Image (cartoon, rainbow, N blue to C red; front, side, top):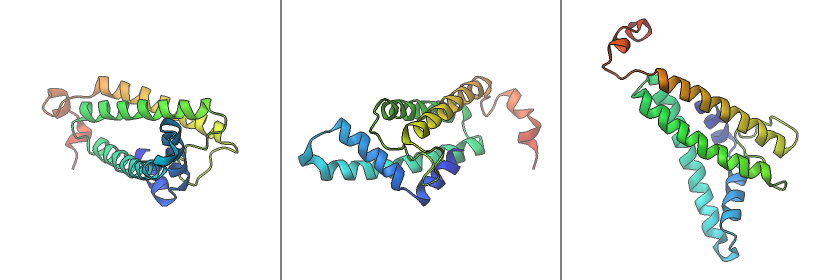
Length: 149
């Protein structure tokens, strides 16, 4: 899911860039810093795409699952806080979480859907992290899915 939504944002970064720019402009409401805010938002969006794709690939590869799931949980919590701020602000744009793909008619509903998705992903990551095994544990060595060619 992380890779899918990263690809959607990479294909059409406009909505995600708009929401990132909006969040930073609210956090740094100085007009003389407008260019800095624009570049920070652009860099943040690029970093977000790299983070999401990296987490998705590492989770698929099952590389250090407890560590990667912990980072994924942290990232999803931060994303969820940002979504909560967008939901509370009635004039906020759509989060752009799915690129140009619109999940709802209005931004607030779309942001609420994204927050719900994040909460489900956090719950899934927490559950998986509790059941994840280290690379050298006996349970991992006996996993038939990991032993298949």
